[in-house]
Length: 234
Image (cartoon, rainbow, N blue to C red; front, side, top):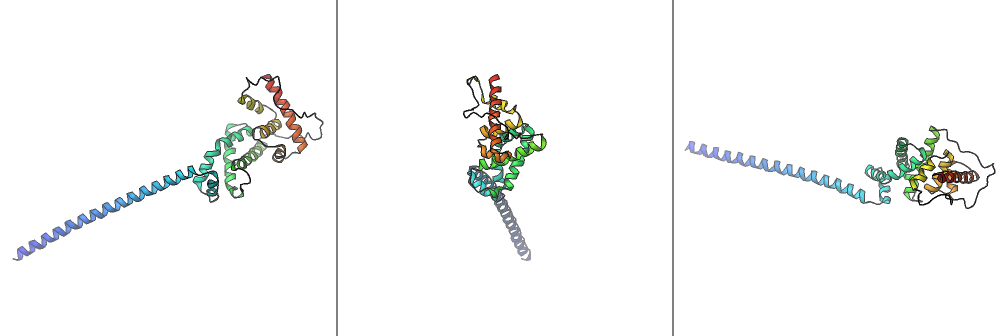
């Protein structure tokens, strides 16, 4: 009788331990499953956020940049870096320096992002920062000087466009014009780049280069003549 009772106790204990092991396995499986689900949700959330960043317009990205959102800054950089590199290159005339100037310009823009009040398009605001930084860099690393032509007499034609009847428009390519501008004197190249390529008016150029309006107008006219002569030789 005692032996039978002992066997029953042992059997019950075995069943209990077996059930306990199954319960532990279930909870371990449940925990692992929960962790996987949490991880999957986290990944989906990150991907979703990244996709949302890509789909946001520039105004929304600017708001995020003002709160130091690095993903938004990266997206803004990706959208504008190629155009801003071209702007920098046309001024510093060196691929590596242009890359450095462009990146430094972006850093400066992100630190001053709270100053952007949407009076102009963000691209125009950013471009002005890149241009100013590029000109400052070029001045520091080259013997760049703007000639003071305001006191010199020079005939300025009212219709002094770049092209003349001696220039064959059919054979002329945009790249040839840009390459020719790069060959001009520094002050001519700067003024023509700002006026024709970047689209600034003469008053804005005066502000950027810190020159008088008379000086800017004379330099621009001389630069056009110089470019015209070089284009006629092509």
